[in-house]
Image (cartoon, rainbow, N blue to C red; front, top):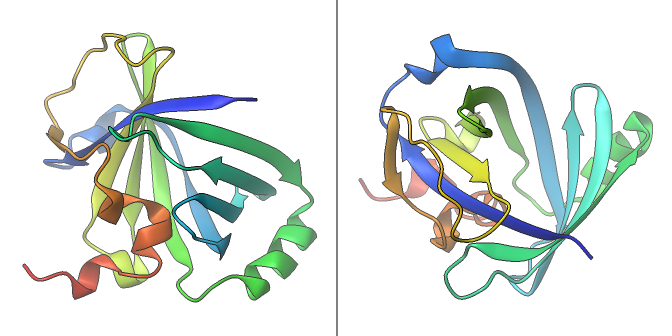
Length: 158
């Protein structure tokens, strides 16, 4: 069993772009987006992935995660079966200290939303916070990709 521990933040400005070690497109959909468990299909760097995530802890820091690489054609076929609301984004990987921040810049129905995530080894692990990191949204379910696919950013009241 693998436990994912991560913190999630909004991004203040585009300074992360200059610091990114790499970036790539991601397309993903959900075969199941129930808050008790999600089943995600993802295309990333010309590879497919199937991921199952369990329910988050009350603070949103930790949850079960199981992921397996699958052939790209199988991922393409599974995306067709997904619930409505495919997520399109570019991921920028930014190394800050001993951590990699995954900064997701969303497009399509979620255009304008930019979120940074950092995975940790423990819930109380310290990490350096870059200047472009904004408000923490860890545990706020409306920022979960599974929810963004159902309730996209463009429909939020400003």
